[in-house]
Length: 289
Image 1 (tube, helix red, strand yellow):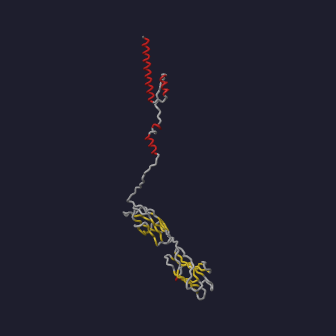
Image 2 (cartoon, one colour; image 1 turned 180 degrees about the horizontal axis):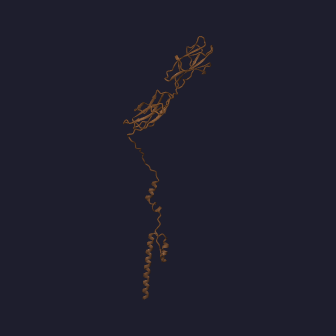
Image 3 (cartoon, one colour; image 1 turned 60 degrees about the vertical axis):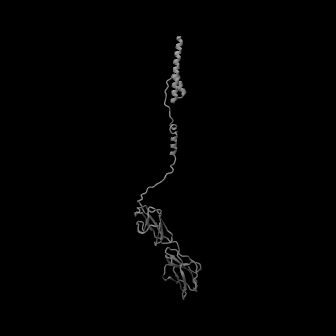
């Protein structure tokens, strides 16, 4: 009877110990021990000291693997779209003329100045000088168009222009546009007309007369002489003369001569050279011009 009671008491104690071990094991498993479950269980069953270490956390998966963090990371690598640019300006400040340039149309004595229209200025003042260091004189104030033709200027001379904008309040721009240009002429003048060639009575000279062309930039005529028809020959006159008449004294009697007469403008352009007989002239000298 006594032996049976001791056996029952021992079974109760062992059952209690086993239950405690089960509870401890479940607790450890839920806490996530650093070691494996088998090692922990073996340590408990072998009555060894068990040290529970904090679980190692994977930062990359625990934090950066979250959906909202991943979305933020992905968006940070994208370019910004739908942006708008804006440049603040002071409406009281008049800007300098924009897009200004000079056009030389090569007709002589003329340059054309262009600039862009703008709502920030209502007029453009134009100054001209023959030296780069000076602003020069005011030659125009243009308010109803975006160009200005400067005429009557000398070919081959460099002119310096300063453009200043004028605002609606009358305030001029602090900045200005500076440009330079030189007019040129590439167009030849008209040929002389009314040609006449007359032989002297002694046969030692020839008189040539003509009418000047009406070109504004006409300067003088050139006269060439040749003994071969269709050949330009020798230049015998290259300057202005009075009365539109030239007497060629360097001729021989009974020799046929051919003359070419052209006009020259102030830019050095020369008119065309073509053969035109002079009607009613009975002497052997046939002019070319």
